[in-house]
Structure formats: structure tokens, C-alpha cells
Length: 106
Image (cartoon, rainbow, N blue to C red; front, side, top):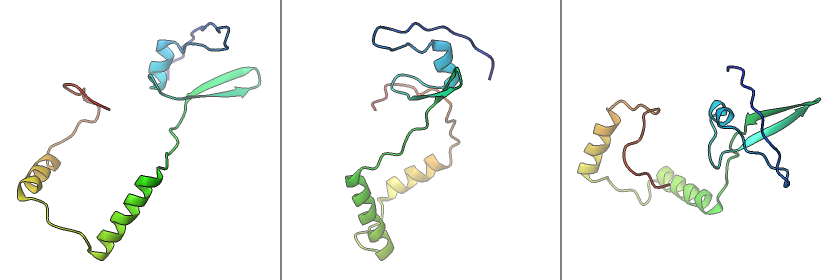
């Protein structure tokens, strides 16, 4: 990673705005997390790894789904058209770094 030096001003609430070049170098954006490590008189800023979130409803659903798959209960065939569409999509190369066309709802 190239050396980047930026200066940020601390607000009265003790906050700073992470300069754009630093955010870009770390690969973080709005809502992203950074970690601050104090090493002597230096502060090291790194992108924080996203902690895994455990949702009890999803965990219970996945356990139920796993049980059904293991025992063969509540399973049925997918509609033929859906199977064909999935097979077609699976055979196409995917560029995970490509820009997304159109609106995206998160």
C-alpha cells in the first residue's frame, strides 16, 4: 500500500472525519468500521473485520432446514423453468468487481 499522509481535525466531541484517500485505501465507506490501535505514540487505523451477527430466528430456521434436508422431509422438486434458469446462470462467468447496473435495494 502506498504511503499516504492526511491530517484530520478533532471536533469538540472528539470526532474526526476519515479523509477520503484513507477510506479508499482501506476499502471502507459509509457504515464501514475501522479499528484504532495505539502503539506507543502512534495510532494505527485499519479496516475492522465485520463481526458475525447471530440472529436467533435465522439460526433456528437454518437448523430446521438442515433437519428437513437430512431427513428428506418437506422437500419437493423445483419447477423445471427455475432449474433451467439456475443452470444457465451458473454456467455464466461472474465478475464480482464489475459495477452493478440499475438500482440496488439493500
